[in-house]
Structure formats: C-alpha cells, structure tokens
Length: 287
Image (cartoon, rainbow, N blue to C red; front, side, top):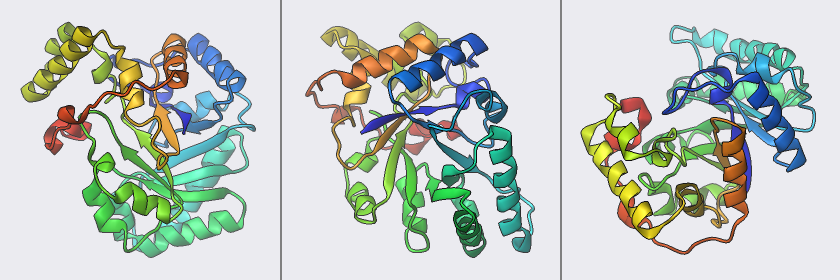
C-alpha cells in the first residue's frame, strides 16, 4: 500500500477546520511528495481552484486522478461529448497530457448514463488522454447497484474506525479478483477523528450521537496513550487488498506526521468495537 495526496484543501476550504492550504505550504508539500516518491495525486473538478493551483507545478512525474459530475439537466445524447470536452479542457488547465485515472463522482450518473459514460472512457483511452477509468462510492449499497453494469479499473471507497464495512465482508476480495485498484479515503473522517473533545462539542453541525462516539474514541486513545494518526492508518495499512490510502492534509507538518506514522511498524490492536452501523453518522453528506 502507498500514500496518495487528496487535494480538497488545495482548491477550497474543507474539513473540520474549514481550511485551505496557502501557497507556501503547498510549495513545501509538493516538494516533499517528490522527495519521498509519493507520486499519486487525487483531485476533482468540484475542488474549487485546485486545477489551476496544481498546474503551477511540474506534474509530469505524478499520476493524476480526477473525478467528474454530470450536470443535473444534461441530455443523454450530450453526455459523451460533455465528458470528453471537460477532460480535454482540464488537461490543458493542469498542463498535463493524460490522466492516470478518471472517476465518476456520483454513482447515480453511471446508472442513468451507463453506455454514454463508457463511450467517453473508450474515446479518451483511444486518444491517450486517459489510462484508467473508475468510480468513487460512499457505500456498499452503491457497489451492489453498479457491479453488474460496470467493472472499474479504479475504485475509491470510504474506510475508517466508524465505517469498517468494506473490511468486514468479501467486497474487497471481489474487487481485487476483477483487478480493480482500490483507493481508501475518509480515513480521518474529514479530520474529525484527529480532533479533540472541546472542538467537537463546539461544532453545532455534528449529530449528538456522533459527538458521543468521537469523545469515546478520544478518551480511549488518551487512556492507552496512542497516537490517533498512527492507529487510524494501522486500521488498513497491511491490508493487501488495498492499493492506496488517500490523505488530505491541513498543512506540510501534518503530511510529515502522516508519512512518518505510515512507515512505522503496525500496532496490533482491535478496533472493531468502534464500527458504527448507522449511515447518518458515518456519511458526511448527511450531517
């Protein structure tokens, strides 16, 4: 398993701290990625001005993965052309020739326009604008809905201590059987799992039950004298069915800490008791 940099904070204010990375920090982050051979960057059309900011750097040696959404009122006959044009424009904007991965950001788009999206992927690959296609999903329910109509080259899935469903069943094995590259995101749950009790209690948007679960997690780490980043990474680090861990960072120092803990020997400790079987608490879109 390797690290992949997520760039939501590059293009817009994001996460618990609602923070956007400034130029000085981004300069240091890109240099660190290059020096430490972390060569995959994950972005999206919806990430504010991430494209234009990233384009200021030499990205030739990076594998760039991006995600797209379709407009709500698009006509079926326009879908294929829309995707092709969007990709070509964004490649120009990013100053690169080809995406390593292009992912559907919403599985509903795939269900509504299966053939049109597949046709766009085929065209982009044929014209050397794309190497691999895929999808980003939020739940196993989504995977069940699409698995008979689409086999992705790449898939992004959420896993963290509160949402361990993909670790506790056979779906990862099925994905690897299909030779799908598996990328895990949300390991820090938008920074909530790295926070503290005071910050969580002051957040008016979070569900009360989620706050309680978070405080239990904080107290458990404190009692056992465990580093939160280390334990959260260890949840998936040695899983051979996972290829990449996508991490978003608030600044350069956080990236250093994440990579340092990523390289450390795993602590064998069970985290199954933290798993929550409640989508309203584990899916950030529902808060």
